Image 1 (tube, one colour):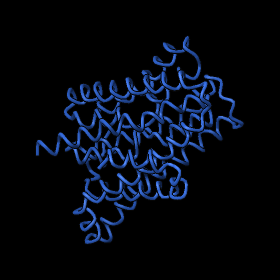
Image 2 (image 1 turned 120 degrees about the vertical axis):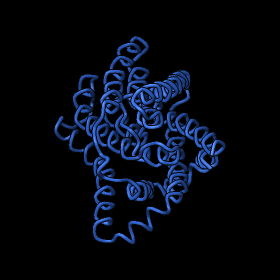
Image 3 (image 1 turned 135 degrees about the vertical axis):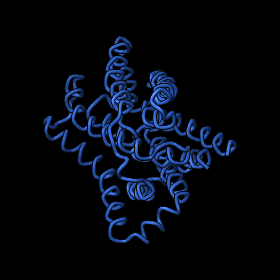
Length: 288
């Protein structure tokens, strides 16, 4: 299903703009369905959360300074692929793979809040040309990220308290979130392809380098995330928490605050991470 969604986005990218507005509602619905399955008593920050967060922040800075001699666009493209927060849809895939949704949801909130706080500071350090103050940048990023995570969480809690039958009905239909995610992926891939095709042809070699680095970083984050997760009792949470990124937010932040060419990194990351997700889901299905 995910490869079909990705290839559909590639071939139908010219039509995506007409339905792009649906992506935020699809993600909200996915998270609501997923959060209705979890116990809110299980929300707690653990050593796994701090370990993944350390890699997200300090690993991103290490990658940036290591690649800076290759140019700003290359360094920033690699940086954003590590620094970008966990995808708001990551709890959905985590649940399908048998991981702890509550642990991943907890880290997703921590990851996104950290980016909202640190992004304006780090982007300014990298020479951001955005016509916004640091406070305005922080409020803008926070305003795009936090409601998407917190509102479905609050709604799920209210449904459990006041409409338990509705809550149970949603909780028993977890498979629906997978198909909603496929439609959202179709839209995201189409938007990424449209952006890449708009770049001038002389930038192709640099774009290919950024896309290749994006793939290497993606594989490394899934691999080391699962290693760290294994040490802390949940490989799936570690892999998805570190490897599955909010690429829509990453592309927007890069275009707005950094070298626009660097957005090829998160745009390519869409393909890499969902190829890995497809393989993981296929393997899990075979095992089951």
